[in-house]
Image (tube, rainbow, N blue to C red; front, side, top):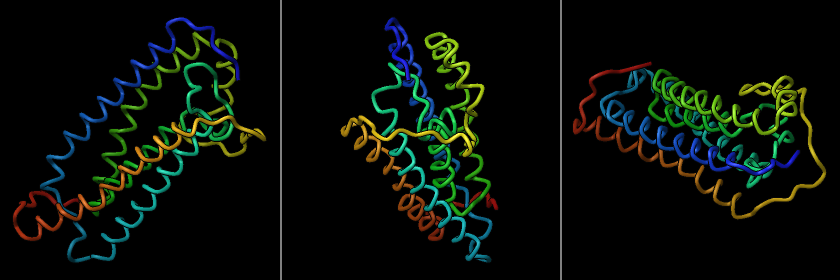
Length: 213
């Protein structure tokens, strides 16, 4: 891992990341309205399928929480100064985003619909794909041939497990790890939120205008 040479790179990268967060919040805000009036196709005639989808989603949310925390062990505080290529970053170049997409897939699954889960995950992936193009343009400009070699051997999102590389010791920033963990646990709020929406739909307080499988 090589240190960057300073310059405007960290500030530009930070602006890209802030924009990514704003876009994601807007996407989730827009998704909330249709979700209020969309129900699971499997409820109540095939409750087992609906519950299986929901429990699979809960597993994915926990994978996201611990996966994002694992990534922060390696990249916490370093992304603006170093090219991180070890641990989860030896499997794919953007494991934080990969785990987040899995978490969003899990959030969507709480509504008992594979269509809702897939749509939310694809929308999140589209945002990340756009952000990654800008981030990697800065990384290529900052780290040059080193980043080119890294990008050539390591895929962007889907992990290649044969490329695993690690170190014996890591210097970590505990506060960044804690913050990442607690931020990721917010994904768990989707569980009671989805249960509340489903309860209101069954009571007739919220109309179900569309049921999706």
